[in-house]
Structure formats: C-alpha cells, structure tokens
Image (cartoon, rainbow, N blue to C red):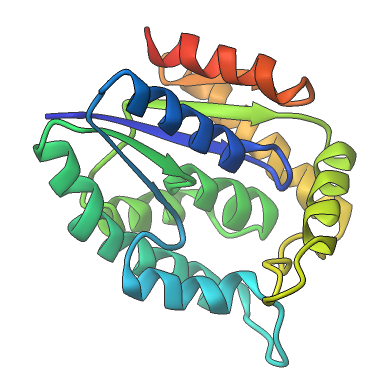
Length: 209
C-alpha cells in the first residue's frame, strides 16, 4: 500500500499552493505520487464542488451541505484514493474528512459523533497516514482569500465559505487545532503565516519523515 497525506487548514492558509510545490518536488525526485482534492477529484466531485463552493441564488442548508460533501468523498475514495494507494503511490489530498469535522462540526454545529460515523461510511474506513495542518490567524487567511478571489476574472470565484462571518472561521480553526491535539501522531502543524518558500521547506521535511 501507498501512503496517504492530507493537507488541511482554514481559507487562505496556502495549502493548495503548497500541494502544488510538493508535487513539483516529488516529480523532480521521481517519486510515484498522485495529487487530488475535495470536493473534486472525480467528474461527479467537480459537479458537486460547483454547487458547494460557488455562491448562487439558492440556499444550501447545513444538512444538504454535509451530504453533498460526503457524496463527493465516497466517489473520490472509490475511484481515486484507494486505487492509488493500492498502486503504492504517495497520495496528497487537498482537504479530506477532517474538513468535515472542522467545518460542518465545529463551524456549523452538527453533532460530532454523528459526523464521525458518516465520515467512516463515506470514506470506507480510509484514513490519512499523515495530516499537515497549515495554521494561521483567521484575519490573515481571509485577507489572502479575498485577494485571490478579486483576481478571478474569467470564471465564478469559489467564495461561498469566504463570505461566512469571521466567528464561523474562528470555530473552524479551533476545530482543526482540537483535532491536532487529539491525534498528535498523525498531525503536523505548520505556521502558514510565514513566506511560501519557508513553508515549502517545512512540508518537504515533514514528507521525508
């Protein structure tokens, strides 16, 4: 079996940039790997991503939001993650089940025990071997996210979560830090307020463990 690493953090933490840089490093060193994301990673997942991340004229209640994320994950695990792990690949995934606990649990207030059960069902029991948490203050992350969104000209920006109140994002951050506290053997926390190159070096150091 391969090795499963997830990249997690609040909006604007830079994890998507870091996963791309990590992929470049692995490619240069001829290490067999796959990069993927949630929601996304499959054709169905990308359709769901459009509904979940783009603001629209209709409201998505927290229950529907949860079920859409879980549907995308179930297909993603079956079609992408498990086959890659069976092929002895290093899998780097931009968000995964911890995001459900942080956003829909701590953020939206859905019962955590229930979330743990449905996460287990949707993921077919597939858990990350390591999770890199990019942590930074909410104000900094949202500032970066809004700057990125303002630069999107040719398509709809993925800004539905960015427009939540700051208190929501504070709860999400606290949720991530609580998860890391509960599982210190799996989580690696990186200070995402530092510059991109410094963070990249830390990510590579963590991956080479």
